[in-house]
Length: 228
Picture 1 (cartoon, rainbow, N blue to C red):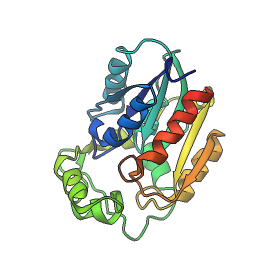
Picture 2: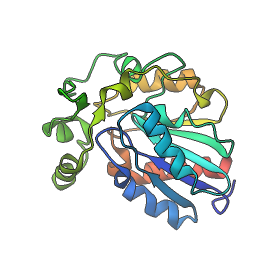
Picture 3: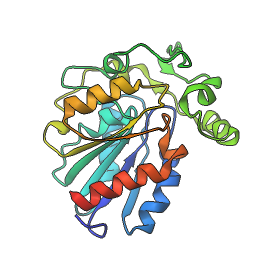
Picture 4: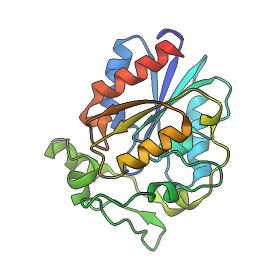
C-alpha cells in the first residue's frame, strides 16, 4: 500500500475515546494518509466490535487497524477482507479462548498501577490519581486532568469474555512495546508480540504514547502503511 491507497483506522482503549489519537492523526494526515478514529462504547465485546465495524463501513479500499490497549482484542476480531495489517500500540492480544483480563494479569502489576474493581453497575472507572501515576505519567498535568475528566469506563464483560480466533494469526502484525508502561507490563507486551510473531518496535514510552510520544506511534503506523 502507498499512503494514498490506505485508510488507517485508529481504535482507542479503556478510559479513553477517539480523541486520544489527536496528536497522531495530524502527522498521518500530513503524510497523505486517510485517517478515521472509531468510538467504542466499551460496553461489551460484541458492541465494541459492532461499533468498529460501523466505522469500517465508511471506508473504501485497504485498511490498517491500529489498536491501543484493550482495543487490541477488538481489532483482532474484525473479519473484513479489506484489513491488510494490524498494529498494536501497548495493546492486549488475547488468543482464542483467552480473556483480556487473563493476559492483562499475566505479570505482576507495577507498584504504581491502580487496583481495578467494577462498581455495582459492572463498570470499571480509573481512579483519578492513576492518570498521572500510571496511565499517562509522561503527559502534562493539564493533559492528565483532561484524561481524567473525559474518561469512559469499561464494562467488566469486555475483559472477562473469551475471544474468538484472532486475525493476527492470519495478518501481518506490528507491536509497539512501551518499555515504561505501568498499566500493561512490558514483559507481557513482549510475550504477546512474540506469540503473534509480530514485528516489534521497542520504545522508552509510557502507556499512552499516542499522547506522550505521538511521533513514535505515527512513524510505526507509516512504516506499516508503506510496507503492507
